[in-house]
Amino acid sequence: MNKPKLWTKDFLIISITNFFLYLIHYLLIATIAIFTADKFHASASMSGLAAGIFIIGMLFGRLYSGKYIDLIGWKKMLFIGIIFSIITILLYFAVINLSILLIVRFLHGIGFGIASTATGTIVSSVIPDERRGEGTGYYALSTTIASAIGPFFGIFINQHLGFKMNFVVCTVIILISFLSSLFLKIPKVEFNKEQLKCMKGFKLNNFLEPKALPIAIVSIIVTAAYASILSFLNTYAQQIHLVDAASFFFIVFAIAALVSRPFTGRLFDLKGENFVVYPALICFIIGFLIISHVHTGFMLLFSAVFIGLAYGTFIPSGQAIAVKVSPRNRMGLATSTFFIFADFGGGFGPFLIGLLIPVYGFSNLYIMMAIVILADVILYYFLHGKTKGNVTSLQN
Image 1: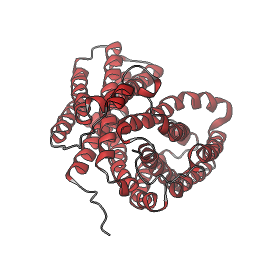
Image 2 (image 1 turned 120 degrees about the vertical axis):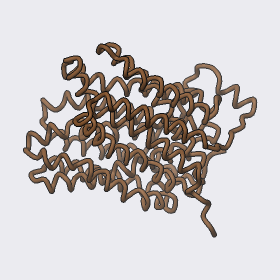
Image 3 (image 1 turned 90 degrees about the vertical axis):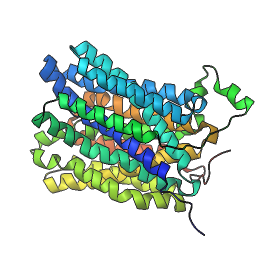
Image 4 (image 1 turned 45 degrees about the vertical axis):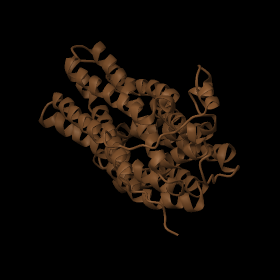
């Protein structure tokens, strides 16, 4: 029996569009704090706010798009997000003080939240149900690759061409993203009168998809734990004198994620989500335990392999689960719900973890993160794993 086709024109276009959106995000988030400190002589906390306020805007964008994406239409919502992003990226050129920069960063986060929710919803509609895990895994590569090369290009441009050239590059990229999205052909979802009536108003389930909440709750802990590495690895590396090795950590992380995506996606479809989620979370635990006792550069990079396998498997698997357990007419809301919770963990995790570091130190912190992920394994079992854990098709 032949598998339904995955690598269609629309799948490629939406993956490329998503790659460009995330490339801009990672390019700027890796350099905006430096720009803020150099340009406006801002403190470390205000420079961090300039980077982090984007996440808050993104959450607002996801809430808005989650509620209205199925009503307005997926492609229209994508255009709204991209056009809004174009306008806000152009506003970076007009920034003359820190207050304006914070406003622009917040607005850019809203635009990104709307556009990235739309890309996640659209790709879920063009992936065949029988290849959902595999397709979501390949699509997630667009984010992984962007996270690997975005910071590199941002820092390189900043050092050799000046920071404003980053804004020029981002403007070109977002325009290319808009042009590529014009060629999308997206299946239209029809709603009956009862469904339309339920989608109107300000009820909580018009902003969040209840059936996606269990896996979304699990994702908060995963992304918050990962933030302990993303935000504090360099500081930890300075303490243990492994700064050179740490500079390669996320390259190894990205390679491990890239290598794992094809076969973990297929296993998801063939064996069910439990078959890949449990090993992914266990890999996370192993990675944290290794990094908590790092003494050499090799050990640090070895931990990156496990953490890359874990995070690179869990996020696309979690998104696929959220979509599979939700009604087809609420696919956009399910995608939005999953990423709202995941972004919340990644955005506010560093603040909470930062309070623990002075008390416990980095080594004990990462042991605690391993324990937290172990608790998340148990949470996953009770919230999703023990039920079926193997939803084979979208709900009607």
